[in-house]
Image (cartoon, rainbow, N blue to C red; front, side, top):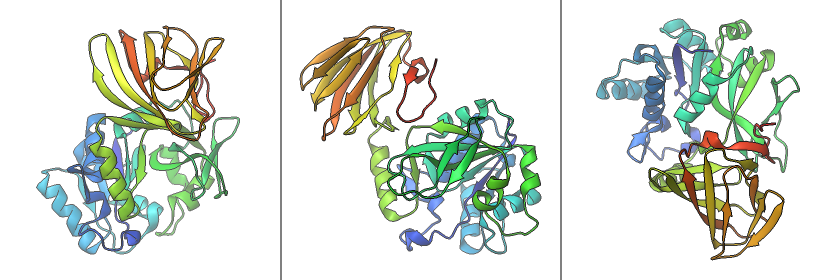
Length: 345
């Protein structure tokens, strides 16, 4: 699917913010740039014309705030007025009928922050005949969210909230095909998630970098702290921070959460050295199993099957030095994964 337009659903009431900010939550500054501006920038980079980027902006002060934002940034995006709260589905239906947007289109929840460039690249590359592609994000625990469960044919179904669960949740970004409109109810007020997706055939793209839903002031503070750290990336097992990159090397800090581990994998274009800073690392290197403490190091040759695990109750921190001619994440050939991410056979 190749989207020609995008709709950003940003007209919500933000009741859980409890008036902590004098603007809609998608306009709250985060390291100097709001979520909305980050979303628009990613869509422009993807090639969506500004005139085809539509803000479903609610009414009253919220509508006026988004009109002011567009004017100040000298953008030509459209801002669509809603006479009343329509729900996510109603807001989308209204935006499609009142603007340049048309299916196939991208749809964003306006309070979602992630690596938009990566997420959109994955979604637009998905090979599927489904009516909708939903971005899925791995969450542990996921008790407060419904899960996306894959069927054998690659489509997905929605599961209700399950205590002590973990897995992929609806991450709030959708790529909708032309066929999706046939599932809209005739009413003006409805939900995409509850009233439309259950009727459609849906596929999931699994995204596993940072993801935040700006639901309350505490999460806003968490996001600001995260963004101030620099070039950080989150994964189901923990995350990493890029420190430095040269012509033939790259240096990272890895942090593995207790009782978690990376996938069993290998690289075609780089070797790696790991130095343990704190914690105890359990390393699989081909058929060897090694246990390393602080100050100890291990060399992972190019092409060697390897896995890093933390079987302790405390976080594991390492310095990783990569040596080779290419350091992209797409040089990870994943063989096994406990989080259900795609593997290569």
